Each structure stands twice: as structure tokens, then as C-alpha cells.
Image (tube, rainbow, N blue to C red; front, side, top):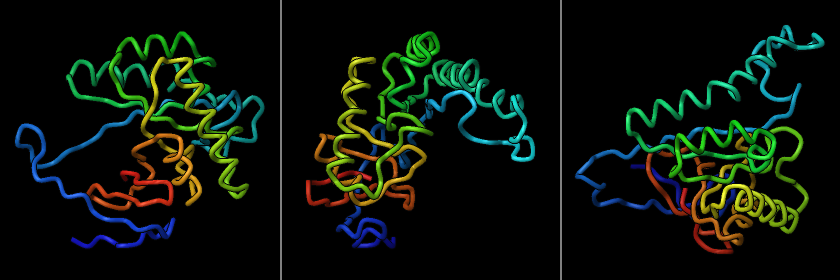
Amino acid sequence: MAQQEVDWITKFPRVPVHVAAWPGGKKVAVSFVLFVEEFGFGQGPVYRPDLAGRSPDLVNENFRQYSLSWGNLRVARLFKDLDVPLSFALNAEFPRAHPSEWKELRGLQPNAPIIAHGMNNTSHMLPLGRGLDEQKNYINDTLALIASTTGVKSTGWSSPSVYANSDTMQAVVAAGVTYTIDGMDSDIVSQLNTPNGPLML
């Protein structure tokens, strides 16, 4: 299979990781991730742009609120009932912004790995273009907040709105992250060799 030797975004060396056998003799591995995101009232995805100018924007806000009050919980419950493993890509600000929703969600999936997903998805995203140190600080703050509110030290990363650059990949490795789900351009697992160490994609 074709696999680039240099990552097209970061320009860092990238090599495929060949898996000789998956557990249970399975031929394919699939990872399901539920994105648990904080937008803030009146912010976030716009599903009906033609109605976004209204005040209040009931249609778009109702779509967003549905995910908080019902959608996330329905998905978590479904995966529990089907006994299918699920991971959370968690905005660090979500548990404090929505404590009762987070408590119920975590109760349904107490062992779901938590992938750090930045602070939030609108007003506190990665400081792209402001240098490696700024990103290191942001990522360390994200990981620290998730650890303090969930008790979990995340080893996975997903950039808010999947918006990252080469500094991001170096910064997450420096923070102790071992894998990212930002790399969505391949069917196979690969290793990105950053100046700060390897990162699984």
C-alpha cells in the first residue's frame, strides 16, 4: 500500500506501523470516538445558515443543545448496550460547564479512554501561528484541566475542530501524549517522528 515517507502537513518523517495480528484474530480494527464538545451559548456549528441571523437563533441553538442534553447520552447508552468500546474526545471545559451531563455520560461509559480535545471548540482553541511554546502551554493546560476534573491523564490528542500544525505535533509529544487522531488521511496506523519523539497517527 502507498504510504508517504514524509508527512504532508508537518514535513516530519512518517512510517507505517504494520500490525501482524489484531486481538482475537480479527482482520480489521475500528475505533469509535464520541466528540464531547463545549461551544458556549450562541456559538458552535451552524446547521441552518439561513436562520443564523435570528436573535435568538432557536433552530441552530436547539441542535447544539440537543447534543448536550440527549444526543451524547443516547450514543453512550447505545454503545454500552451493544458492549462496543467507545472513547471520548473531550473538550477540557466541558465537565465544569455541564457537570450533570458529564456525570451521567461518564456513568454510562466509566472506562472510556479520554482523548484530550483542547479547551473548547469556539473561543479557546489552539494558539496556531504563535509559536511552539504557546502551544505547549495550551496543551499542558488542557491536559491538567482534564486530569483535575476527570481523574484521567490523557495520552491521546485531538485538536479542536481538527485544526493543528507541525508545532502541535511536537507540543503534544513533549506533553507526554503518545497518539493523535488528527491524522485522518490513511487506512493504516503510522508513526510520525517529531523532533520531540514518536507520535502514533
